[in-house]
Image 1 (spheres, rainbow, N blue to C red):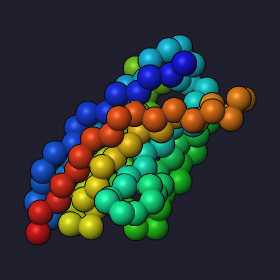
Image 2: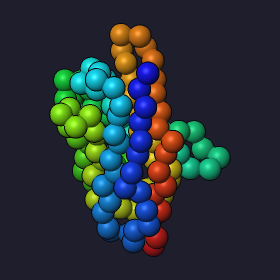
Image 3: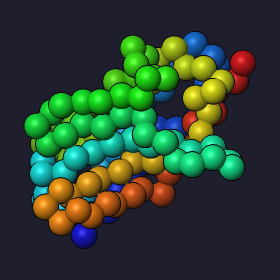
Length: 117
């Protein structure tokens, strides 16, 4: 079982920055593919960024060049640095952990990010 806890959300003006953190329980963090997703009311949850156990990264086109995902295996934590924030980045951001060996997803409770214009 993997438990995830996000932190770092909040209210920021357009053009500002926020850093989200997601701490994972358990000793299998280094084997997990970690990611950040976001969701707004009435819309499906969408991928923001992922990082594999090998350190490869992938980003949604809408955040390329503005967001950066990073993982610290020693701290069982994944981060999402968000720069040049736009009002359309407003959403609940969810941390995701995926265990490929058992094809199992784990989700955090989410953290609200609000970008004012």
